[in-house]
Length: 354
Image (cartoon, rainbow, N blue to C red; front, side, top):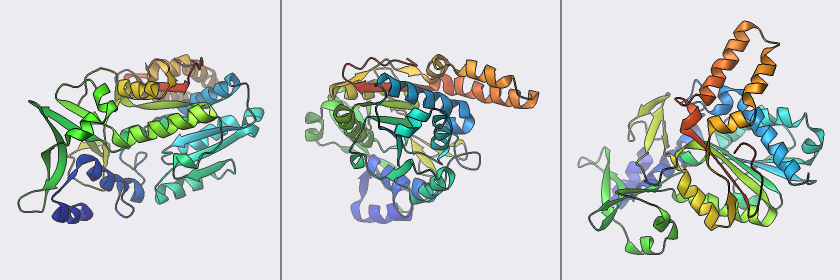
């Protein structure tokens, strides 16, 4: 917060995406750099923390995709934003049961936060795993990119249409220079004219422009086209044509005001999956239909797997497992709120889970 106020005293205002980037990723005060926000003691719980069955289904999907590629001698699984390391740890547990796949495996964890790296390292401790800071560090393949609640944590721009004007949301200081507030500034027409992605976006009064996510999608597309592979995304999101204002903040598992607890709360937005699909197709990748987490996990056999495991469980353990499964699948919880997207090399026919 202090850093943002200091910057604003010099610059008067900064675009929303710059504000989010400082709040979440500043090297000293950023939320994801200094905190471990995952789990009951944190601010939110992700699917791998709810049930290991989620991770098991993803592991089986990766193995099936490797088989679809004719079992190459080397396969790289890249987890985008590995959180507290739970998904990677659980994936390895399943991968070890498939010797030929495991022998071919290398895992890359894309993580920028030193604190989270230490937590991940402590939990994983496996020589198959290495940490990377940038997508461009990957120079071989095929590559499976996994993104679970990764893209919703990246900075966005918000652009509003008022009559014939395009206004970009900025953050500035209040009159007494002690509080933050929003300000709308006229947007440079050149940015709009030269930007094909903005033109692809069907908007009414607002465009949420996921500036960092788009950069990642372009880099990932290049790697898949060069080395073969796939991108599998799970995230809060929507598929409708119309853009929505989805900017929100989370603290202690509750909604939080955007300018409260800056640097100590998450700032997030929902993924526009239709826009993501268009961007990936524009970059010559094959995109299967966008589905729900509920449909994907059920097609992967998660209920059948739970039923098999339940046969050797106590009543208490069984009840706990099915309660957690309900959280993953129920339409009113994560089942429909989370969408799943698969992109692969042009002409790719793999469709497991879709």
